[in-house]
Image (cartoon, rainbow, N blue to C red; front, side, top):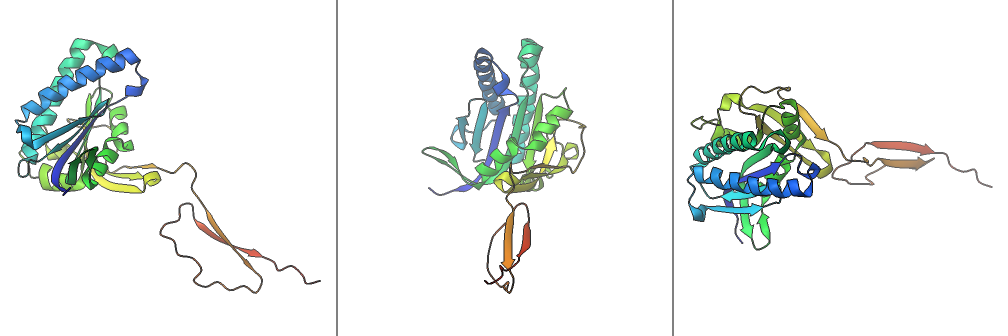
Amino acid sequence: MTSTRLLCVAVDLEGFSRRSLAEQESAQDRIADLLDAAWLAGDVPADAITRRQTGDGELTLLDVAGAESEVLAAFIGALRAGLTAANGAAGPCHRMRLRVAAHAGSAVAGPNGFAGHAVIRTCRLVDCAPLHALLAENPDADLGLIVSDSLFEDVVSVGTGGALAAREFQPVLVVDAAKRFSAHAWLHIGGPANGATCAVHAREPAEPARLRIDIADGGHVGTILQVGEVHGGLSLGHVPRSPRP
């Protein structure tokens, strides 16, 4: 398999696991209908789009080089409008709120799913703390979007506006130490957002490891260890030499 630059879009339903089985099944049907209609609005050729359902959302690869801005803006605009209409008809008890992430880069559709750095980065972004926080801080919003820094620079900031006006994005640093992931990205809620701009949201490892080295009396410290990364810090201790009998 040879990877190529593709637009990768991930969609997840906020709070899916908190729903009952019947509510999950109903939400899956409604999400499928919403996504079908939203992608049709982007007028993407059938052979340029590959979609994979994830149960509470979808992961999509698009070969639309040169048209990422138009396709993404049309998709987000149609998805947000469809979501508003669906929530209005379903009532507050069945309200759906979606998280969407987008990035463009190396990706491929393989025999057992998608692969490539763009896929991994997009999946990290769609489940990141800043995007969850964005929806929590804006309870009236039904859709929160995060795009990678490179996609914002290459596509959004030079796009035609519409559903993705660059001035409505806010920068954020995403840090997930447990997965050794950090990235600059841009958040969008469809207008002025609550919450701090340039915030850092970190997800730390559950139990950071700490490395300790004890040196006995008369011992020498030289080049004794090479490590790529130490979480939790490094400390040197002294162990007195036991007296000789």
